Image (cartoon, rainbow, N blue to C red; front, side, top):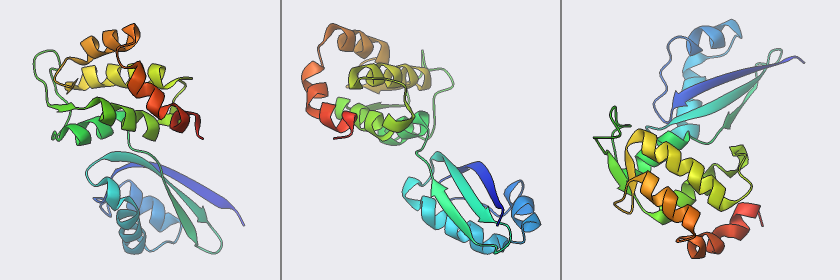
Length: 168
């Protein structure tokens, strides 16, 4: 029973039955409408965010499994900031603001895909993304908050979530 793996990046809850997905599903003998409906249901909690999805298809039986990944860091930041999308000019145009707690939530959601050994290091990485998409943190530019993180200003907050970061 050969398994075909299809990896795609989709907009959560808004997948359309068109190219390039539809032709691929048709070639495998799958009902495109049914698969798209199930994909939209599986990704509905991430509505409007870009996220990776993997379809594992048993070519013989036509059975498939949907694996939904975690949205991109940019998508999570934009969602928490309540913005429509990232800034085209982050130095001059800020699209929204998040709290330090939301920053930590993004770090925890992305934990498995990050190379950071500590929550503090992960926060610095996410702050870099926040800066590049025009999202401020606690009303401050993300670069300024990154300096605070390096100076230990937010260590108490990070220590509250360190066990979750380590997976305990």
